[in-house]
Length: 127
Image (cartoon, rainbow, N blue to C red; front, side):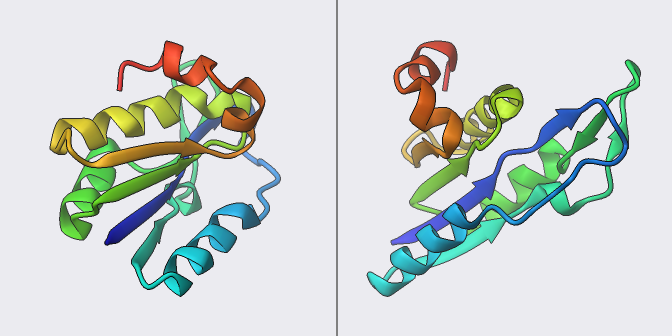
């Protein structure tokens, strides 16, 4: 099975955001690999921030970059890590991109947001 794990992009009010490595997704990747599956990680947040018209900053790749990566990787499963509450709309956008490519791709939302809000992501996302 091919698994693609994606860090959710986010918007932040400042050009400098304290960015730290979120280890959960890397632990998950190690466990998936140890179980004999092929796994890749996409971290669009490593791109330089893009200043938005409202003065905030977007940390993440373009929809085209995300779409191209998903198509190139051809995953059976996509896991989206949504650690911050303020990034949940971006996580939903990634899920929508996945489903627009192939509705059969199993799409999972994880991270702090999904753990705390449990059913809410299912109600709030159209993906």
